[in-house]
View 1: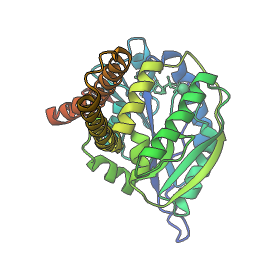
View 2: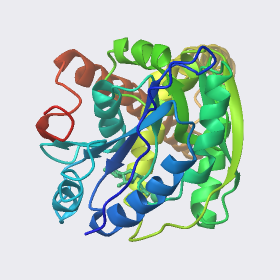
View 3: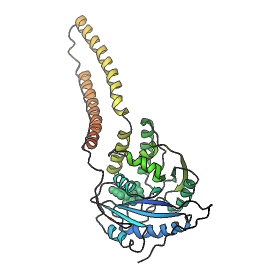
View 4: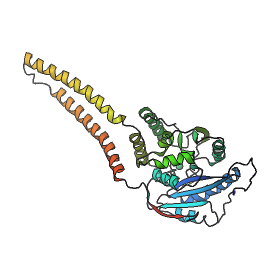
Length: 331
Ligand code: UDP
Ligand code: MG
């Protein structure tokens, strides 16, 4: 079994030396047994390129994996004190796993990163450099998404367009969860109690001084994506509904306009019936109105339901995730 070497902080006390700090890499994993080894190999190389004052902690959040992911991670822990593992009691989804990571991270800065090496670890030293120069958030923007399928790219583009149109706090497109967050930002994020959440939307909402680093998103190192269409759809809806009430407000305006139009039409029908008598034919216009209004009503109720369902999730106040066990570090 390979041993991963990490640079320990030096005890250099010279006046010019920057303060020793810890960087936590938050790595959510779900059925990623084969990806753990290659990820840690790459991280060992990256760790060697880091400034000596920065110590790297790797915090795996095992999101209820059913394969050998937990065993794979634990096999590295005895020889690597900088690796920690938090096992969740079942699969809670990546957003919840990320929250668990933010809660358990001890670093002065954190970087959420996927284990499949799609988030280029090679740019981490550059992100750390910007942080040391004063940035509180360092976004990693994808210059190239050709490793994602055409359908996924189109959906992502549509999502960002809709989100940024509706939301009061736009977020940069092509920046995922992979970004550096200073401790101050993490502490603010930890105070946000909402359960229905899209973390990257909150990363933008908190504000703070942000810088940017560009990278090229590669194909997965191992395995296959865990995000199918319905998962992504659910996350996108959570993001939009969690950030704006405009989809609710639209019905106030649309209802008002349709109400006025209906009143005018009703007046016209009333007057013309008085004047010309009862006009029996009218099946086409009747059925058209019934179908249109029926459809609009159902659609509006559906939107209401999306909000009410999420209100229920919030008021139940269940935790976003349940920790089964922790390994590594002091535990
Ligand atoms: N992941 C997770 N829980 C889930 C789904 C995914 O922790 O329910 C992790 C996964 O192991 C990976 C990261 O989230 O480290 C990104 O997932 P994936 O690569 O499948 O998503 P994609 O990059 O295709 O959007
Ligand atoms: Mg991936």
